[in-house]
Structure formats: structure tokens, C-alpha cells
Length: 74
Image (tube, rainbow, N blue to C red; front, side):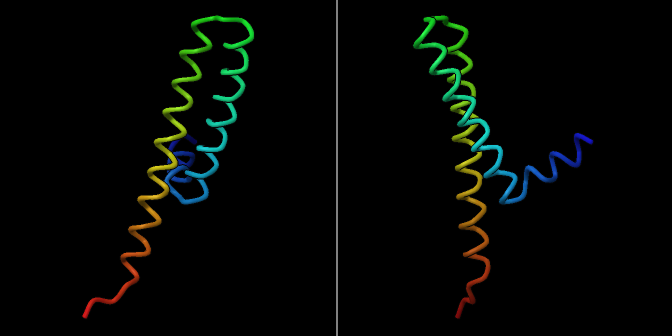
């Protein structure tokens, strides 16, 4: 089961879905951290924000590599 999720996570849509989910969770925890002032919520916000950025950068890199691979060189 985890192998199937990992394989799906490596696809373009999987990277985008995980980035969006982590960004949504980061938003929830930043709202909670500002409201309640709990340091654990700030930490979780940071973790989910970094995870979301990693997925976004992986997606951009993958899209650029796919685009570059389709070009024909002289």
C-alpha cells in the first residue's frame, strides 16, 4: 500500500496534490498558532510549509526535465 502511494506521489498530479494538501495543513496550523500562541503549532506550520515547498520544487524540476527531454538537439 505504501509503495503504491509513493509511486503515485512521484507523478505530476501526486506532487501537486501533496503540495496542496500540505499547504492547506500549514494554513490551518498557522491560524491555530496565531490564535493560541502554541509553539507546537508553529513547528507543525514550518514542517508542512517546508514539505509543500519541496513538493512544488520537485514538480517544477520534473516539468522542466520533461520539457527539456522533448526538445530535439541539432
